[in-house]
Image (cartoon, rainbow over the protein chains, first blue to last red):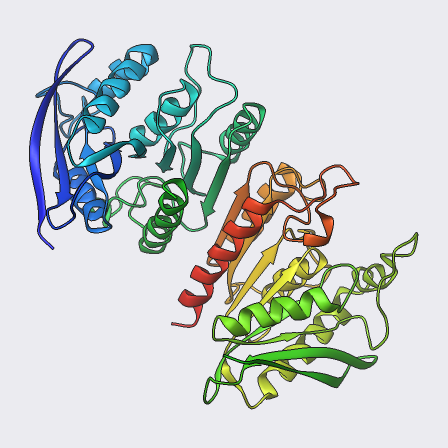
Length: 240
Length: 240
């Protein structure tokens, strides 16, 4: 079962973007496609590895880029620079997500009628924004996402199915924010689930954070495993 | 794969109790055992059917009785009579749960070192109370349970793993009660998950409530299916 990958440079609002597409070379024909949306640091090898994990499940996956080619967060005081730019222009973020989704759908290995998106941290917010803005994909998963609403008018009803995997101790998602998200998605008549994991905080899927240095931000093996299982159940349902 | 069942009458605090045990006759030797704790109406055929569903998954299951032999809720103004008696004496409820668990463990088909409990509505509260009181079983699942704490001193740390499947629109479990449960289980250092389902209320697993007559109380197919899947993942993990 050889997992293959190719780098894709694509055009979108504001310039060029660069991501990595992964698929199982032994699977014939178009298959469901999953957009993988990176965290605050942007496109990186950890996202490509998630795309390969999805390829092993029989999907094709595209670890996309919403910051722009060469724009990657670096450790240090400016680590969130490119994310902050996007948070300041959620409509531009939406349009870059749409360009990334179109690129996924354009790959020969992908059935464009069967796609979904998953995202981590800031990428989890992006999954939710895809639903809120009515982009044309079937489902979205947020792993330790951020729940503040965009400033544009959001879709109602929300058509995408949503699975929100949340670390209960996440300082970026206190109970009030989780409850507000449930209320927002209910008001928008979305088909939604929120799975809250005790003993887990922000970044619970991020294996680079096995040594926690920030309170409430660390890898947590149980939540990582359980949320990945929940995602598999969810994608199987979405792509039925 | 013949599913077999036998009725068991057992002794416990305050009298005799009657439940139904189900197992797959083609499975040899002791296997993990699951206690099935009924809702407000007490032991009934719907619980026996859940026990059979668990038997089809390879477990042995005991649809137990905490009200007492012959004490079954009936439609009408007194439907909650026996539940109310138990809610007024949570220590007695705990001891009846313990007697039911001991009965499950005593069956030849059950590996007494590998048991768990699931419960519906009031039975979901019972699953949580088993954890809170430190009963000797590995895991508990609450389906549309009720989250108020008992009046006795609860265990810390809680040893049982817990999965709480919650309908977001459940009038018996508003957001404040869900948040309080998360805080309680976190303080008790439990290994816990809460799965909240949008568009679902109380009784979302109860097929007898396909025609909802009480706001927020109805069968909901998606939440029923997803929570049963989540339970299967959970039991597989608990019995590893």
